[in-house]
Structure formats: C-alpha cells, structure tokens
Image 1 (spheres, rainbow, N blue to C red):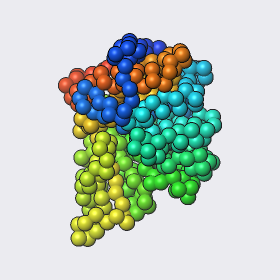
Image 2 (image 1 turned 90 degrees about the horizontal axis):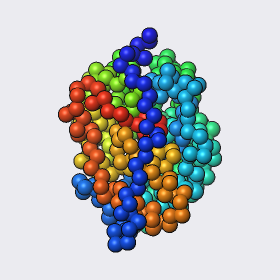
Image 3 (image 1 turned 135 degrees about the horizontal axis):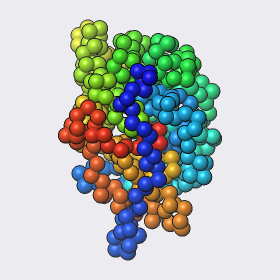
Image 4 (image 1 turned 45 degrees about the vertical axis):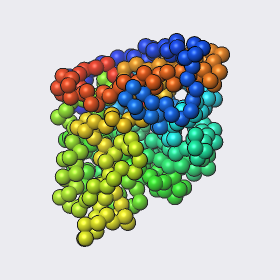
Amino acid sequence: MSERFSPKVVPLVDLRAGALPVPAAASQPGERITANGLLTDTLGRNLRDLRISVTDRCNFRCSYCMPKEIFDKDHAYLPHASLLTFEEIFRVAQQFVNHGVQKIRLTGGEPLLRKNIEILIEQLAKLRTVDGTPLDLTLTTNGALLARKAQALKDAGLRRVTVSLDALDDTIFRKMNDVDFPVADVLEGIHAAHAAGLGPIKINMVVKRGTNDQEILPMARHFKGSGMVLRFIEYMDVGATNGWRMDDVVPSAEVIQRLQSEFSLVALDPSSAGETAQRWGFTSANGVHNTQAGEIGVISSVTQAFCGDCNRARLSTEGQLYLCLFANQGYDLRSLVRSNASDADIASAIGHIWNRRTDRYSELRGAMSADTGGGARRVEMSYIGG
Ligand code: SAM
C-alpha cells in the first residue's frame, strides 16, 4: 500500500443525492424575501461571495483532493443532464447578486474542462452589483489549459485568475498532480494569463508536510517581485477521501517562520472584509512594506478559523446551495429552477436559506475528535467547488 493511500483513507461517501429541500416558507405569501442586498445569516454575516462549481471533473489527481484510487476510471461523475446549464447558472447567479454578492468565482473540478466556459463568463460579466459596479469575476484553475485559453477568457470578460501550483520542482509537482503533468506547462499558463491581463494573479499552494513543504522558500523566491500574490494554504480536512491527518498540516505560523528565515516580512491589513488570507508584505531595509517586492498570504482555515466573517456561498455542479466548505448537505436549487419558479421565487429561496445559516465548522473543529476533524461526512471539494 502506498504512503499516499494510507489506512486512514475513508471510502467515498456519495452525498450527492441527499439535497435538502428549499424551505417551504420561501414561497408562502407574507413570508417571501425580496432581494435588497442586505441579507444576513443568524450570525449577522452578509452574503458577498459566490463560488460556482461548473464541473466535478478534473484532469489532475492531486492526492489531497481527488485521489486516483477513488477517482479512477470507474468513478461515476455527474451525467451531463444533472449539471446546471449556463442559462440556469446565470439565472441563479443573478439572484445572488441581487442579494448582495459582489464576487463570483468559477471553480470545480477543473473549470476550464467545462465546454464553452467563455459563454458563461460572457453572461456573468454583464451582471452588476446592487451598487451598479461590475462583479469581481474570477476563476480558480490548475493552469493546465490556461496557456491555450487565457486570451479567450479575458476577451469574454473574466477579470482575473487564481492558479493552483503546489511546487516548482518538476518531480514533486508531477507526483502531487499524479498525472505526470509538467510544471513548465503551468508556468506557461500563468505567463499567458499575465500577458492577457488576467491579474492580479493569485497563486495557491497547498502545503502538505513531507510532500511539498520544502518548496515553501523556492516558491516565495520565484514569485517575489512578480506582481503575483503567492498564498500558502493549510491542508484541510475537506471531503472524506484524502485521509487527512493533522500531522500533515503545516500551520501558517510555521510557514511564516520559515519564510522569515530568509525574508523580512510585515503583517498587512486585510484588503476586504471576509478575506480568507492573512497578508504579509516583503519589506525594504527600513522595515516598511516594499510594494515592488509584493506580498504573500497564508490561509489558515485549520489553525485559525475565520468563520466569523465568512460571506461565501457555494453552488455545486448540479445546483445545490452549500453554506460552508465543510457542509455535508446542500439545498436543492436546481429543482426550483427547473420548476416554473420565477426569479422572485429563486431570490426568496436564497433569502430563506441564508437567513437560517448557522455554519461555522472551522471554529467548531477543535471541539470535535482530535486528528480527524470529527470524521464527519463531508462532501468532496471537487463537487462543491474549492
Ligand atoms: N481545479 C481547480 C484548481 O486546481 O485550482 C479548482 C478546484 S480546486 C478544488 C480549488 C483549490 O482547492 C485548489 O487550490 C486546491 O489546491 C485546493 N484544495 C483542494 N483540496 C484541498 C485540501 N484538502 N486542502 C486545502 N486546499 C485544497
């Protein structure tokens, strides 16, 4: 048995069928909620950020996300008819925006595998926030198809991209993506995105102890002064297939410590409310942030929960609304959209679901059984969207 597929790996639990119904109150006269941009949940959190998973398929098999042993040739991906169509995604997204969403991120799976994704981007780019400003429309990709698609994405109206890149060392990178994909091709994709003006580009590196933590410093050296923001992500206990163990997590505090062995860094203020990353700037000799050298970020969802201002909703590939990355059930918006519901009905449903939101998994994780994150049945990230 390989080190990657340890006995800790839990077989895939298919949670995709167990959607929650939309609250009945949403369609009852007198209880309808109209979108006015002011929606809050039970903890007073607004709805500002929507992540849309456009496919549950991926061309990589990163062991921490879609391990090959589970997502093999026999894995049952969603049939095409289950996926929300572009028209359906647009219709739902429009109501989210009416409720106050300012940022939409397309994700997956690998979003660039969804055929004609540019058409969806073109439609979403037309949406305006409640204040009348264009959306912050972005996409997270593994970069494999980016060199080919960057210009078309920009032309369609995409504003920027986040590229996942776990190592610069080709051997480590190929091992992590587990499909022998060369790092040079992802770097070419990043270059193409930069040339197309899809910036500021963010680079996400998931750090797994003993797998790629030796790449922390080389990655920081490479992206310092590039105008791109490298972010180190703590390996998370999402899904049920990656055999997550606390021992594999490199806490952000340790990442910063390792960076400080070579670079001088200063903590920066958040650039927006609900920001997932803590920002650190490279400094000049006088200790002041050197904006030319740029900044890095750390995303500490394991060691420092940031549920308190979480303003993110997730729309799964088949139209379920998830209120937390670690949730095990979503609300079935697709059935509503495929009934004869009006836009106002969809808006009311979203309003009722968000109003009831209590989720704060990362804050509660610590109180669950140590090491496994409670062994909860959580939906896979490739399905819900990262
Ligand atoms: N395929 C696209 C990509 O590679 O960016 C988008 C989907 S992927 C699920 C989104 C992000 O989630 C990637 O940056 C990936 O590294 C991250 N991710 C997946 N599983 C993770 C885990 N267990 N812990 C932390 N980050 C994870």
